[in-house]
Length: 432
Image (cartoon, rainbow, N blue to C red; front, side, top):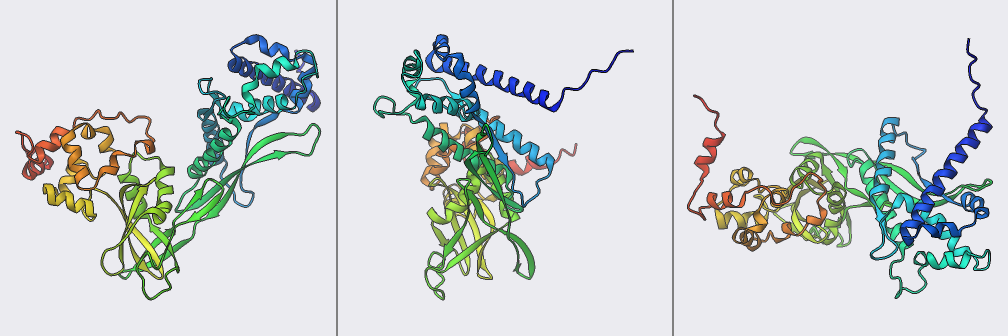
């Protein structure tokens, strides 16, 4: 009978783990130095006697610290951690304009470790120290004219953006909204553990029920994890809403119904969720507010100053309640009315042609058709062609759907015509 192998002691396991981590670290360090210098021999300039110091003073991998006051289910936490790693891998920095792209994951651990070592290294510490520093001069920005890329500032700007994207991924405007803030942590032990940490802080959303025409309507306060670090709430003033009975600078909180969130997602169907949500807040800062009758408002919805629609709302109980989102071409918007006046296209026509959502203008060939594009520009819809930067849909193929000629035919701009009768007949089931 074979004897069972003894499990290694905790001390032995720790030694094995440390040895594995050390091997992996120097493998990455060597590859990074070779990538930056395009010279495998540069790594050999570091004497082996320096290895222990470099390893013990290294930056460890980015860590996630969940809010201790709010319990995230383990399954969700694992998804969050995987998404964080994914963001780290796809986010890149480069030390020189034409140099290799380095993942943020590699930079925050091995890159920062090498940077710290090089900047503190004295020229006379060992014979090859000066040559090593000269070979890795691109890591240190002393003269912006010689090396205009300050990689550290670029990396931490991207880490801030990563925090915002992570917070957006975790958050639910109708449930819990998170902010994600990064900080440098140094554990008080020997040797000290040094790493960047992202702390998630949970904010349970404020939910209110509004009485609308005798019916209760639940809604959520409009807010956004601004730059990952703070929760910014949407608000407008009495002056913006033309409420003469209140002091002009009175703050009016903004709430949104689930229906409006659904329409926003449906009609801006290819826009990155973090951008569309952020724009909910910023639209009350940069967008014009149009009073449309008693207590009814249209708020320009802008993506980085490009108007793509309107938030429709009413005053209820001292708050502005957003009840829907209208894409800029839809009936109920000034541009949508101009489009109808110019072409005769009504609500059903727009739905049939799919021009009531933004993805149509990027998946199709509309923007490549000069006559058709001019039509949309003339009625005030030019901005919908300017937000390609905000699209996040890896499967989208731009300009592939042949739709322009079909719309022209529908409008009678070509020999082939298609009217509402044709449309309705297409929608009827075949009775034969």
